Image (cartoon, rainbow, N blue to C red; front, side):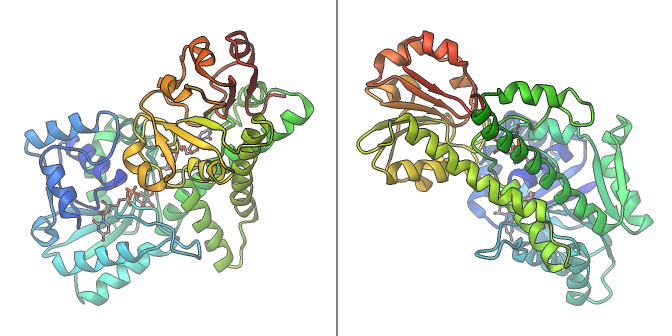
Length: 435
Ligand code: UDX
Ligand code: UDX
């Protein structure tokens, strides 16, 4: 099949590369000329493990190319995927659909034959019908069908998640379009991955429901962690005891500094708005949004407490700023709330992150970027483990303690154990959810 993907962000680029690896002919289109030039040189503008080698091998095979020219790309296309950003609109929490609608209109004006117009970006319920209206209005009589095909990939595991999905969700309302989508996803259905075929609104809602539920699960365990500290319980054991129940499952029960990223914060807010707009308020999701902010505030209190309630002049080494490991994405990372609060209280903050500096430098002024944890620990009054990069999991704790002015650690991802940290010479160790 011939496929065009509009938007080469995390989802668009991974989708385009993986579709070409299925054997389809793929053109990835983006309005950002610099990005397209970079992609044409075989360079990947984001950090995603193995994406560069997979992209280059499919480019060499002649199945994958990049362009800024949508019209010529759409010649004889079977399906065009919209994967442009749907950020949170300034101020009101709605999903900003301007890029999606702009892409839809441009696609309508560029199509010469029938094609399926597939929305992969996360969009509110009803958007696919709006896309159909926009296209029919732009070019009356145009032959096309719309399809909702939300993506569930996680950054840092994107190729694995795309190639071995728990399920493929397809919202579709025409047999002709269904045949096209079956042909596109045949490599997955041959390997017997479940395909959920449903109507447009249901497919759109499945995506929000899944993300909001995952954000709720994380927030639930984060609230339990606070209680554990009060009653002297161990959140990791609570999570283990819960997770062994097949109905709960052990995933997404790691207590931490709160969820971040380009999806959970945006999608929970959008779903809360959708509930309000349809007089069916999503009160649990609204509470999750509120509690997640409080979790970050609680982390700040932890660090202040670790430094004897006074950060003025204290040197704090923060390990990890990206919203999770194995990504360079800083969108809504908890570090963007926590670190400015430390600086605001007079701390001198040093930051170590294997991938975060490129994006982080502009977002985190007034911090020093240090290339490794040991240098960052020099004469420091506290170390904060904020993102659980593998590089931070096996540190020489004795060596760290010796370098520090006062060896204290706030371990916001429970990477270490209290006994081992204290035995290595630290005088205080503060985890999350362990009383
Ligand atoms: C996007 C959506 O933001 C998210 O809601 C959904 O869950 C997954 O897809 P992401 O791929 O991270 O997430 O988007 P983003 O990183 O914002 O990249 C979007 C790309 O589209 C950018 O490269 C941008 O240059 C491009 N774009 C944007 C277009 O090509 N055309 C436009 O009109 C606007
Ligand atoms: C998420 C969804 O998992 C994915 O299906 C969807 O397509 C996009 O949004 P992503 O945002 O890339 O993926 O990261 P994810 O691994 O889900 O983590 C999201 C946030 O939750 C991160 O800040 C992470 O640190 C946090 N998290 C995750 C926890 O705090 N505890 C956990 O147990 C799991």
